[in-house]
Amino acid sequence: MNVLDREHIIALSGSQRGGSHTRRALEQTLAAAETSGATTDLVDLAALDLPVFNPDTNDAGDAAELRRRVRDADGVLLGTPMYHGSYASPLKTALDYCGFDEFEGTTVGLLVVSGGGFPTPALEHLRSVARALDAWVLPHQVAIPNAHSAFEDGRITDEGLVERLETLGTDLVEYAGVESYPESTAACAVPTAD
Image (cartoon, rainbow, N blue to C red; front, top):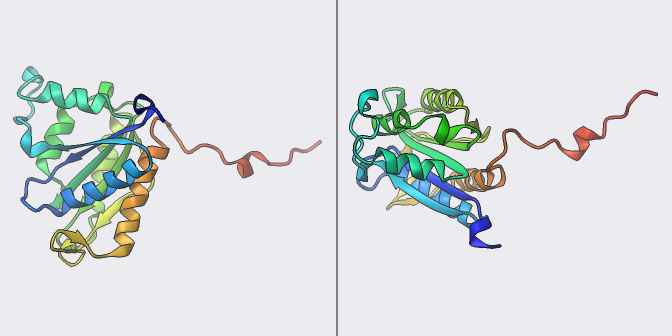
């Protein structure tokens, strides 16, 4: 496959913590996307200059670079720690700088890490925002509750979690550029009445 014909998947990391579990999970997911033939880009939002969004200065700092990187992607992986029942402010700021030009019709995957219980609210909030931007959000998403027990020395120790992350990476590649799951041949083979 020609490099120019390969799907391009980027991940936006909403974590600013050193040794971030979110970042490690995103790396695992992107590695699966690469194995599926995609090129990848991990966007560390902590490394970009993105001041709190102000619509009067929507090109502040590195906003134009961020928008270009998202616009150039065939699939976007949103990864964040859960803070107070929702997703982290660096990811919120990054999404505020983006719009329909960056996300409309783009396949989006979701990944949320929590130090405590299951991060359902943060996943729901991200899904709502992505859908409001007219993105197509994958049904498969990854939640990592009690993250301290899923990682050891920066390595993911839960094989079930590794499998879910790899599925997310391969799904991002497989469904990049589509707005819904293709109809299966079984679904198309419905007998008609004569």
